[in-house]
Image 1 (cartoon, rainbow, N blue to C red):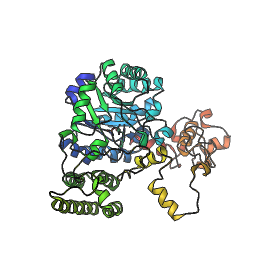
Image 2 (image 1 turned 90 degrees about the vertical axis):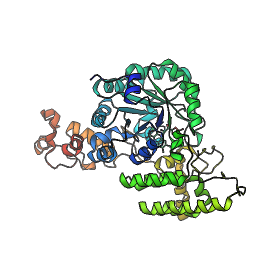
Image 3 (image 1 turned 180 degrees about the horizontal axis):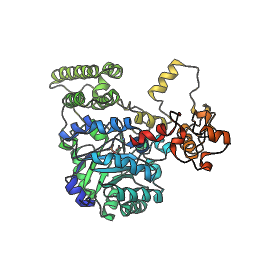
Image 4 (image 1 turned 30 degrees about the vertical axis):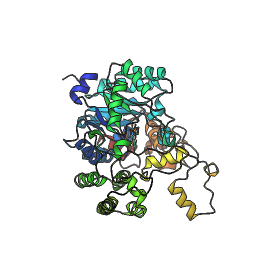
Length: 474
Ligand SMILES: Cc1cc2nc3c(=O)[nH]c(=O)nc-3n(C[C@H](O)[C@H](O)[C@H](O)COP(=O)(O)O)c2cc1C
């Protein structure tokens, strides 16, 4: 059957989904998606997966997708970051049987994306993006979609969206913030940009940014004319947002913990979710916040959540009819939006213990010292933590990651492996042996002997074919 495109894909395969849970690293895992679906979400995205690692590493595929396959978890879009058409398509081919579309992340503004050259850092590389989308559109059995950030100029954002549409993108999510609007500098998303894109393309568009409650969803649909609205932070603080409800936190926390028991995930994800759900209450019960950060088991986390529930219920019965004692929200035990503090307000998001949040802290603010840094400073009061005084590491000639000290090619391990494999050359610095005895005795490269077959690396050679490519084919 021919694959469905654009509006037909949205209305038939995605069931005309309007309420969409965003891709979220370490946070849009199966248990969370199921919870969100039970409470009004009609479409979910996986967290961003790294295409190259997905192709190379069978365990990564298993842990991040194959073990998470669940019939109730549809429609589902798998998101990848990638910067190479072949790698993107190889990864997508390995994922397409378990989802309804493949999304390319063109919105990640984090430092890790800058270093890895993906996400929003590809937004000026239109030729590369065209090739990636064209190839995916041609080779995949499911549609390819993109999630973008806007440019400051509406007109350029529109041309960008049209370029992606022309290349074969079948649905576009527009996050109405620029690449620079992140962390403490996030600010408001521009629905004006989103509206202009919506008008200019003939494929469905999802709006992303500024969604904290159902009224925002309805206003956004009306003001921009988009097909659906995607939420990330709003959904993390209130997974029942799309139902238009604000239940007691414990109700959703307990339901989520039950789902995690059925569909286990790393404890760090669970902890981060509970920090967000209980965000307001944890400002009142600071000691339980420390407990939550310390416990090492799922049942330990459930016990802290239960204790928070008891404290809230006591407080509810005490406060009956009284006025709030502080300027914190009166009903801090109710799922409610969290408004990020501006750059000068200084206070941190209590739940922000994810890698992403820490990265934002490191990259986004020069005034606020992260918790980890504060701890390090306490342990070493005389040490200087000024990043400008840190020794600079030598960079890989190709990707900018730290290079191997003794690498013969001046590359990092990953790039060295590729080069050594391609050229059938050894790198003793990285312990990679590709040349055969014959080649060594002749003192020339395998390619000169016409020895291109990967088996030339010899059985068991460290970093040889089986290690470099074998896992990608598993
Ligand atoms: C914890 C977290 C993880 C995220 N991970 C991803 C991701 O994997 N891929 C992506 O495209 N965006 C990611 N984002 C960005 C969101 O999808 C979304 O674009 C952004 O948060 C703006 O939406 P919001 O205003 O509803 O939060 C993440 C956001 C959060 C809060």
